[in-house]
Length: 114
Length: 114
Image (cartoon, rainbow over all chains, first blue to last red; front, side, top):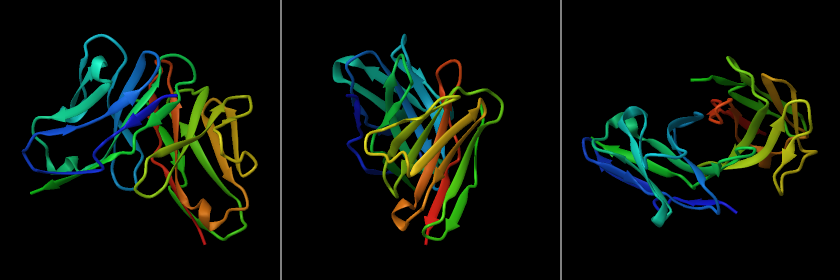
């Protein structure tokens, strides 16, 4: 069965600092990998996704993520965070085929210090 | 991107009553929609897969008679929480899949059962 682990429950960084959110997955086949962001009381917005090809994917709002098959990781990065990036971030894995059910990680709450 | 809308955004009801939450794909047709439940400060838990014109597929441990799902058209899926109790209070989120396989999420519906 597929699973996703986000080791960091809560991360605090200063505005302007770089950011890396960790995500490790377990999946027996070729995975679809996603990063979503959720603001308080809101739904989820897709930041980026990896299906195949270039392992470094660019997303919206200046985010990028790198798929490393050997490490079963898909870490999210941003060179310089903005106060508006404060939110909950979810990594998810899904099947390449089929019903496209997603399994989500526990989430990482990002706090930005001014 | 595609737009998925949920209604109502929040609802308060008395214990024992039933509540219906709608999920609409506004600018595309969705043969498959998904319903998730999110407890405070936790991740999303997939409840069921809603298939247009057929019965929903429920995840293990989800009571199908408690959470009725109807996907009567290609743009609308409904989740009815029957005989709601305080423990059903939660944030319910739907998502819909477009032809490319990408999922788009609704804004979520917060249910509070008194």
